[in-house]
Length: 132
Image (cartoon, rainbow, N blue to C red):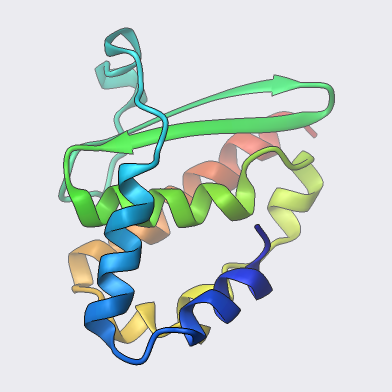
């Protein structure tokens, strides 16, 4: 999914309760992480909830997998991964997270969740830089 598809999907919902439910539903569809991946070195700093992020580099693309112990955060992870996972490092670095503002997440998330979302995107971009 690209950012425009995310924006168009959010436009289908009439209120924020429906949008939150969609985000939670996305989180339920995330691939679970192996317990062996839920280690401190994969724990994302700057998030109120526990978020584990793992990656691999294959055929010139970075694949990310992540999960959280919180439902809404898992949904936010699913949104971010739909935009950034399985892309080239340069595409990841060049993709600014415009969807956050355009779908209203910037104003409807708590400051701690917004900070965690920014931390996750920064970490994803930092990992991509390693492969340039």
